[in-house]
Each structure stands twice: as C-alpha cells, then as structure tokens.
Length: 86
Image 1 (cartoon, rainbow, N blue to C red):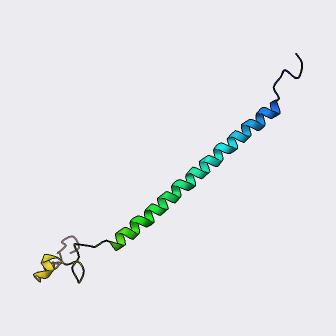
Image 2 (image 1 turned 180 degrees about the vertical axis):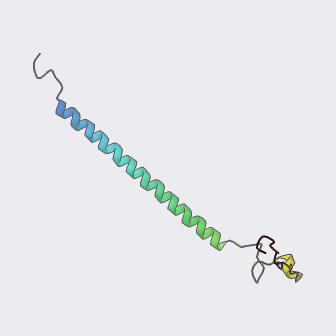
Image 3 (image 1 turned 90 degrees about the vertical axis):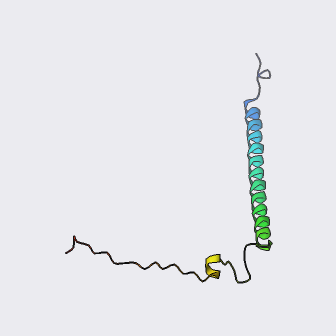
C-alpha cells in the first residue's frame, strides 16, 4: 500500500473541526433568536397589559362592597392570661 491510498488524517480532523464549528455557531444563533423572541414577547405583553382597560377598578381605585357600606370589622386583640408565668 502506498501513502496515497490512505486518507489524510489531518484533512479529516480539519473537516470535523469545521463541522463542529458550524454546529456551535448554529446553536448560538438559535439561542440568540429564541432569547430575542422571548424579550420582544415580554415587552409586547407588558405594553398590552399597561394599556388595557381595567374593568374592575372604580374611579378611585379598587373598592369593595364592604368599604361602600362603611363596614369595619372589629378585631381587637384581647390579652391572654398566662397561668404559667404567675
């Protein structure tokens, strides 16, 4: 067998490195595109949320029926007698 029949090892390694480089570049590009889409989507959703009409809010903000009826719940805390400290 002569040397010309054997494949050139250095050439094969260079081809493999080139294909690995292309694959890594594609992965980076896809990651950048996906992150860009996520950021743009978040901005669009944020703008839509800030411009939407809030049908549940009154003119003065959020009001409840209890506040309209001037209902105040009395929640006074009664001190407990602790017989263990006496």
